[in-house]
Length: 136
Image (cartoon, rainbow, N blue to C red; front, side):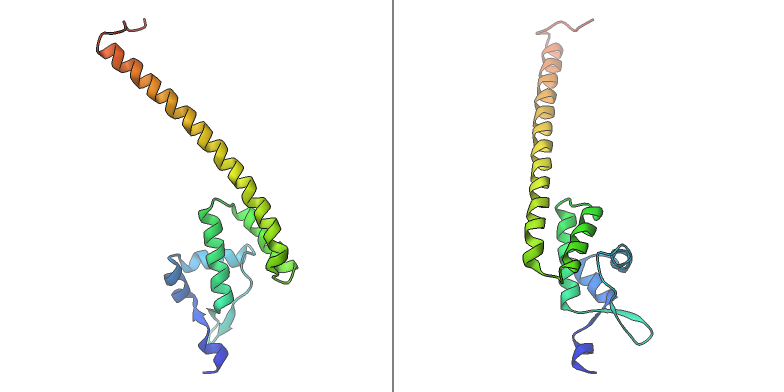
């Protein structure tokens, strides 16, 4: 085996290491989040360190709530700019800032919902304890 082949990992092993399915990896390739993999032997997909790091990045973005469409935009921007992190970083910061705003809005809505539930529960307990007559 040459040095290049030694540093490549089969799709099944990558999937196992990352806790995802091989189908997920293939899907990410199909929709353009990943470039075409190296192929060896009978066409088996093999991945080097850069591809594994890219998959980890995709999984982190997914965990943060970034949509596949947004990831595709990031991937295109990254690839068009010769995979230069310097050009990608400001775009990514802008995207994350937008998601922080969405999360803050969800937190405010959930906080409001929690207050309503607590108030409603309190009224029900008061009714059950006879402190307030039930509404008819």
